[in-house]
Image (cartoon, rainbow, N blue to C red):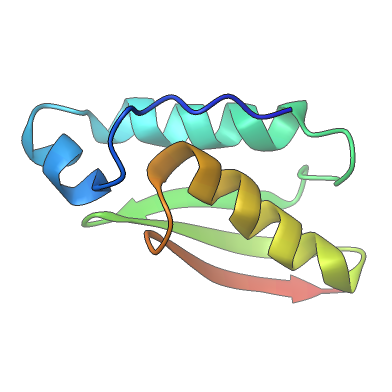
Length: 87
């Protein structure tokens, strides 16, 4: 289960209201680590403007989509970009 850390769907506005980049990154990393259905040890989370960027490697094809889904649960739909590859 992933808890939504942000009450609004518009992540860009939240960043403009003092929502720190570090807290966003930490929230996404924490949510990915807490998910027991994917191995997130090789996923790097970074922030580029209002977007969360997921980079790195996963072992199964469905894990890319799952990692994006988890990150979107934190920051909102449309604010996650994936640069992950499957090994």
